[in-house]
Amino acid sequence: MWRPVGGGGTILSWVIFHRQYLAAYPAPYNVIAVRIDEGPVMISNLEGDTPSGNWIGQRVALTYAEMPDGAVLPRFTLAA
Image (cartoon, rainbow, N blue to C red; front, side, top):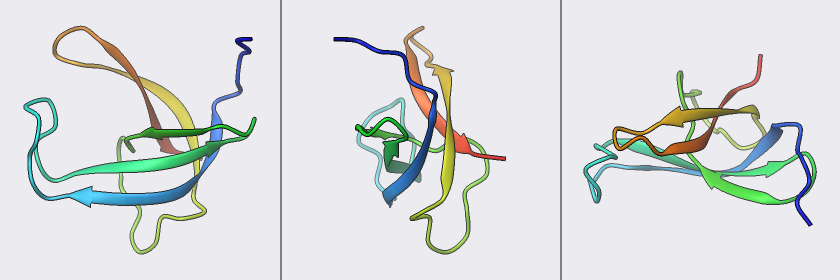
């Protein structure tokens, strides 16, 4: 059953790729694992300013990014 979620979460893990695999993702780019507040884990990207040091435990908020091909993907930003 589908249920709405609040959009908040916590970074569980992160990595920065320094090699480009897809044209839509020029290197370097980050990938994060986020446990959303309702429980599931999502794999996405962190938009905007990247934290310094260890990102694990940082609070994030859901946002959406439109890709060059028109697809809209869920992304995260650091929570205020």
